[in-house]
Image (cartoon, rainbow, N blue to C red):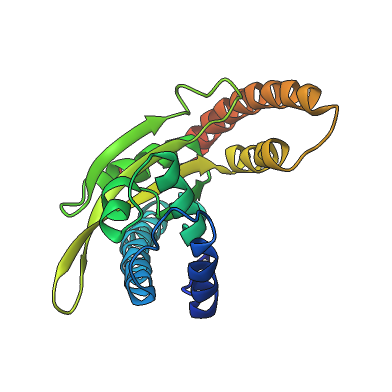
Length: 234
């Protein structure tokens, strides 16, 4: 069963973001019009729906054939206008819709939390096996963890969104991780962005140790899972 947290377009919030964007930098021109922002977010939200629907179908198929759901839950999000503007400013790109489409590849995001490590790679193979899904970038932080201990598989793919009068190819960032990887990442995120403690460095070292222990535990759990479950041919 998938517990899905879906992003929604909040027009009131979007309007407020548009106004606050104007005050980010006095020497930056606003990104065209409010209506273009609404259209941009609608298209990227549609791309999230396209990918998440595919993932739900894969999950249902696994349940039928193997009585096993690879996906525990998914979380979807749209990057805010302020975040997009800050990213463009950091990269020294003009703040306009075209610059956004060409240079910001993580506006649409899906976090897929799986039950086991094998599930991550099975889902990746199935998704990239779709004719209309094209891989843009891939970073495997499971086989090659970050120095902090962070583990996850990051994909950026493109998918066509068929609108009433045109088709747009839209990038979507997908993070695939297991449940232990997810709660570890959540705590590491709090430490990185929210903690203001003299013990921060000590916590960071403890998290690195926790990441190593969790990796070993997941290997054992994977072995047990493969022994008790029927063979799964993705």
